[in-house]
Length: 630
Image (cartoon, rainbow, N blue to C red; front, side):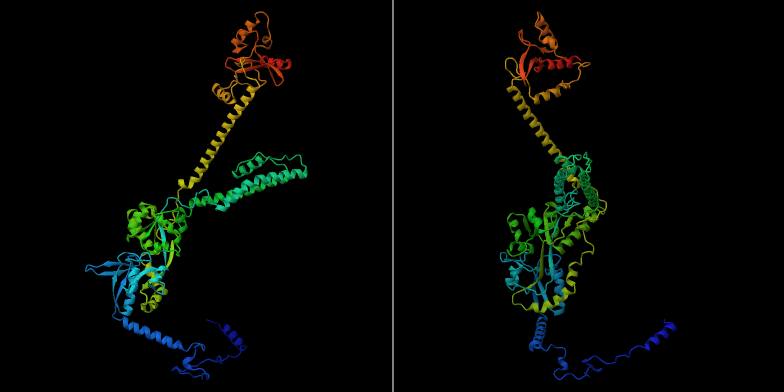
């Protein structure tokens, strides 16, 4: 409530207000209480024609009157008429039941609409079904619904019939579209998501491609920049790293490993630091996204679109004589590219109208994909969910063994059908349009379903445990790494064997390692390596003293050339005692003299077949003697 001061202020302000305008807008037509006009109309306009367009054709009112008169006559004619109505077994949109007296009655959304029309136009009807539960097409017309309508055996086809191009030559579709039918794929729910391996999920495909390209390119780029810097600056302190070192630095940084490279130049340090910063940010994003994916990942199905069915050659099943089959067999329809799958027996069309049987027989047992329109699929999964929940009340995976794809397999508008030349559409279509625009058709289609989504793709379980499927990429990486290491090891062994044979042949061509009779006694490096592993190794480092070790030295250098009386027998006894054969067959020669790389050697053959070289030049002889005596 306003106070006294506020009222005084309002009165003072009203004194300055302009006077109120009581004049009415120009051209306004005033009416009396009885509805008669007060204002005089212009000379060329009549009150009865006020509001009509001056350019409107003269026959407009006459056409409207004729149309209204025709509808009135049709309503009078329809009153008390008996119609024959054909339908299909397509639960829940249209289906039939047979009463105890043998009378077939129609059920479903279609006949709820028919009952509404019956109440409005006061007619009676009987329900008939075709011999085969199929819609019918040019190549499949016998015993079909379209054949009955085309032959005027029925007055109306009360079913949600998809608008297909071939059928337009046989029937007249209703001008009112009942709904846009969506055929959905339902399949067995996979245990793991089909979105890919868990290790690759944090980044999309092109991110991985760019990371791989950067991993290959950054190493050579750093190497080239270091070379260019050294050549331009002439810096001798910063040694240029090799290409292999740069490449391993890039790879080691990606694996969060350290590096032995320690650049001194500031520009080189910035290059290394830039790559480290990039890898740090990249690995942080990867770790965070991987954690989110493995805990709250979005579940995806292996078959979501028609292209998935086509590219993977997946077996699927649909209703015989339904919209999916004719859309595949007709050349100018959206599913015509699947026609070859029919020829290759990947597409199955079942004649069973029981959706539960088709779900259990084809999907649950054989792993097929079942394609059905959305109302039928939704009700079928809901009833299966209620049954399984009564068996097990806790496990969601038991409640929902099936999953429904998000993307429709086929979209088609659906209507009623009339015989060609029938005028029932002019009477029924306006009423059907009112039902569609008011949402009654849509409400009737989903009336038996709950408001919540039944068995969605992602069950929404917050307690998600990691499965083998999430770690499959880890196993693949391990197997690939071990296989690569095995291949490299085999290559190393092969090249070692080839190089050993080549070296042995080269030494044999120069005469080294041969016995006095010309036979080669020097084994290859491959065999020497094996013998070294078996014997534990009998080699020693150069310059290492043999004192304190159980190593049998060769004979003293002086005794090799001692040819005095009895010296040969003493030499032979010494050689045999120490495992060294100094010549053979009692000959005076104590070995084979060979010229190796311009130097003279005496070649002895040990008892195990190995050759022993003793230099004959004084400096080499002194070193040889020093090695085994000092």
